[in-house]
Amino acid sequence: MTDQQDENRLIAERRAKLSAIRENCKSNGFPNDFRREHYADDLQQKFGELDKETLAEQQHKVSIAGRIMAKRGPFLLLQDMSGRIQSYAAKDTQKDIKARYGALDIGDIIGVSGVLHKSGKGDLYVDMAQYQLLTKALRPLPEKFHGLSDQETKYRQRYVDLITSDKTRETFRIRSALINGIRQYLTERKFIEVETPMLQVIPGGATAKPFTTHHNAMDIDMYLRIAPELYLKRLVVGGLERVFEINRNFRNEGLSTRHNPEFTMLEFYQAYADYNDLMNLTEDMLRTLAQNILGSTKLENTVRNSSGEVTDTKQYDFGQPFVRLSMGEAILKYWPDANEAAIRDPEAHLDELKAMAKQLHIKEPEVDGIWGPGKYLCEIFEATAEEQLEQPTFITEYPWEVSPLARRNDDNPFITDRFEFFVGGRELANGFSELNDSADQAERFRKQVEEKDAGDDEAMHFDEDYIRALEFGLPPTAGQGIGIDRLAMLFTDSPTIKDVILFPHMKPQAQE
Image (cartoon, rainbow, N blue to C red; front, top):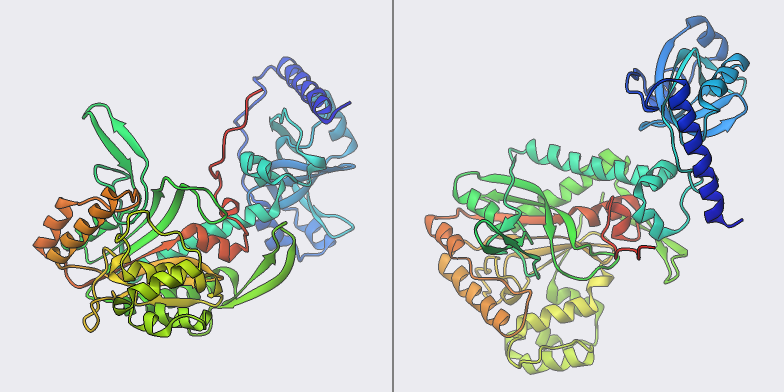
């Protein structure tokens, strides 16, 4: 018998039990009149240290509910959202259960009320004085209930993965704690949480290819948000001087271990601040989150080879001051053979930058002249230094050419007051002092439009309303975006972004 035939047989047996339950119990088989009063972990925390005799004397009556994860003789192991606890079925109870339900199966969801006891092995259990089958599981759990072994199936059937994998449940508990921790940290510092449009007439705030849709009533094409930035800065113009949004963004790009077309970002903006203030805030916030959520400022991540096998571990220390390097300093540090003169003065050495790009096999645009020295410098940085940034590192002095929304540096207009934040060779955050000169912003939008006309489908549109908003006056402001998914990967030691997204995008399976 094949595995599929065996599974079909088990499903048929369970369906037959459900039919019998409906007939014998005169119900629809899915009652909703049981009310849980206690959670497994709360009981473990409160009574786990009491000895068997003391617990028996106290006669604590409890009511629990959960999924049956194992059957050990008269004991049923139940799992709820907080953890696991056992229930005990005496012989008479077992006979009654079999008569009413045709026996309980692993995966069934039941409610149990009774007195709390401790077994001879020291495990808490609830005597099944009252019990009720709440949901009949028609499909058996996989592989003797030890979890899904196929990674693709884990992503496609996340509900089963969550039932059977302690690690998966912990991953998403940490992700939730990260988001809650960020909210608390920012609101304590007078930031207010806002919501901005996800359907936009003009996609802006990032250089990325958008998803296009059509609004039938207005008969116009619209775009799914690639970033909330331009709307959030409109709010700062309006006087909401500290705002943040934990938002869903959509970018029509490829899938990888670090990219999902739908992802979660934190963006926040602070008036009367610059990019240095945000670097300081980011360092303190991440250090606080690590200590509060993980109990340590040192994060350990495993290193895997191309086959996914663990080969080493790395430790990232959030307790130490974060490294701060300019883009040029990072290139020279990690590529000693670079032309130092060209790196330090890109505007005067465009030909040398082009030569270095060819040496690094960087793919250049087909139309000559589209890339200036700033774009070449950034491409060289990404090819030589980015993946080498292991410990928490801020990279600063991004050229204006690759920073269409950032404020130029007062002393060197070739660069902007911008940083990106890296850990383990991954970019986690991007922040800068905001460009609030409406004329400069308009000129940069025009440059983006030229690049779009030349074939760059990730270049920005010209947003006239945003220019109008700047003309009303944006105070000196700094803003930043942090990738929640990548941050969750770091905090949970997850090798791929799919591990930290409950339902990652995947190609549809062929229908049989």
